[in-house]
Amino acid sequence: MTKAIRGIYAAAISPFHADGSLDHARLTAYCQHLLSDGGCDGVAPTGTTGEGTSVAMADRLALPEQFAAAGIAPERVIFGTGAPSARDCQALTRACVEAGYTNVLVLPPYYYKNPSDDGLFAYYADLVESIGRDDLRIYLYHFPQMSQVPLSTDLVNRLRAAFGPVIAGLKDSSGDFEQSRAFIEATGGVAENFDVYPSSEAFLWQGLDIGSAGIISGSTNIFANLVQAARRAPEGAERDAAMDRVREARASAGKYPMMAAMKTAEAWRSGDDAWLRMAPPLRPLPADVAVQMRADLDALAAIREPAN
Image (cartoon, rainbow, N blue to C red):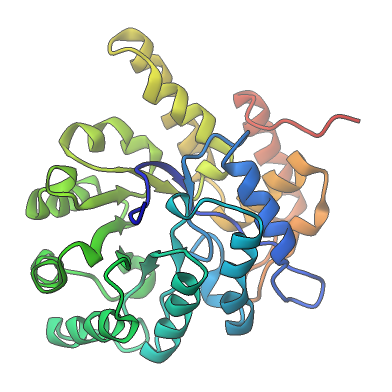
């Protein structure tokens, strides 16, 4: 399979060694957990929640081979390969496809603000042409709050017209469901084989009802099983109750800095405080904030500590 399967994805958090380098073995094992007991259909490593732009190029380049050695199915992984430098993005993407991972999530070049659609088209066109593989599948990454470089529906359809199935989908991290709707309506969504992923599990059924492909979310690092329960629930009161729990969980996570919160939750689940390390300038949760978050998660029964 070339294209990533549709469904519930976690924007996977990234573990670091004490020296600040990426812990490839721990990240690979963690993604295996997410794809099994963690309840995820897929994982999206080295994205925003994974502090991808803070991970050294050498570490990012080496990661796909680690996933391949671990036997993680390529159709269940969408690697983040965006970078301000077009050549860096190309090198990261090439490392993925050469390891067998042809699905990549690509931010626009985010240092220069207000680029033209022509300039953004050139960035993505250069990526497609430099890789030169028909099995490449690019998921555009719309996250204007962080990148300050929004992607227009006109640009998305221009890229699709030029490169066909290589432009496979889009992650919409705007947090605005109407923006996700606009991308789905402009492209045809899954009916036209274009996979739009909103970034909040609170939008699960709204999105599926109009043609989204699922969800790619930071908080599904811990809440994916709740989302899957809502996805499986029969229409009616049971589904409504399950979605209320999903929305409650997402609202709870939204009270805290997402990356630090998800790392704190994983440290609790795994019993491994190495997960608390973050790449500067991000910092772990202060102790008093962690206590409040733990109370919130206990109320949701969202964390299972390792057996003694």
